Image (tube, rainbow, N blue to C red; front, side):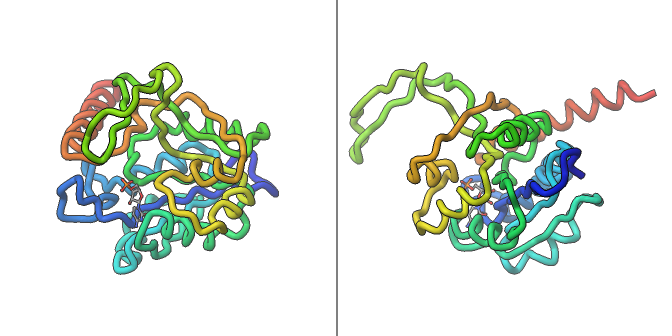
Length: 237
Ligand code: C5P
């Protein structure tokens, strides 16, 4: 339960309705286990552990709504499961409709299953301090180039001004509703809000909030969880 709970509710929307074809698994991505627990369960546990989230809404494929309820961590924080849509934008829109009382909305990909609760708390703190939109950002380590459809390089933006963006992305709920009311589609919620001319602030992201997208990401995630589990076993009395 949020320590600052009251009139201003923080609702976390977890889009988990993607099929995750790039991961090459047999199940929709959010249901693929990492260290023995589905990514979705880990992501929701992280949100609740932050102590900043009053309610969670998960959007999953319609046929998996009941199955998802059985995967949820036991908690005092209400967690709702609703059917998502054909594209991520449709899933987030379904989540927003299921969260009419939200003052602040976090949108957090289930695929960022190992996101530290401290990062979630950082995003909420900025919102509560008055920011309208807040996203976690990390400096990029690769040089990024733009290319045309034939693969020829068209430009090399200055790397020092580029950031890789993670989730949770946090918003004043009315602003996000207004962005979604425009009907525009995007892979990034902050992108929709930028189109409205709102200022989007960044907070420092965390490498552990990486998105588990490819088979290599899954190997990394499983390794990190098993290392952490062995450290905890050694530390236990
Ligand atoms: O495909 P991508 O990795 O960008 O998906 C990001 C998140 O959006 C994933 O957690 C995925 O489950 C979710 N998603 C969704 N509904 C869709 C497509 C993707 O909730 N139709």
